[in-house]
Image (cartoon, rainbow, N blue to C red; front, side):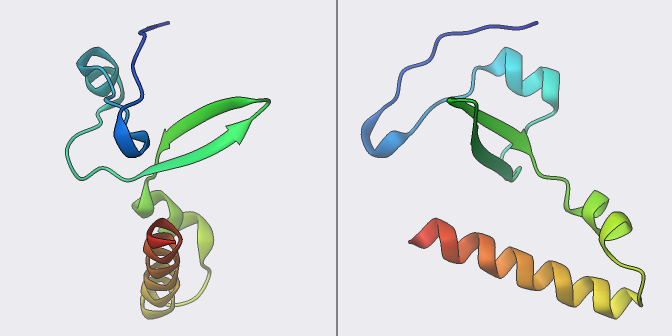
Length: 80
């Protein structure tokens, strides 16, 4: 297990240490799901391609529409 201590900066900005980014393959532009579980903050890389194969039984167009809606909702929540 990799364990690091980080500081929360203005506006809640937290820098993920390089050792953790490297271990999880997190690069600039990677989307992370952030949630609270058992009083802990959990950051989890969001794999949109994985969601495509698990979410839809319809056509590729339907899958793309669903992902577009999810991405729009993600950014809408982030702007709130």
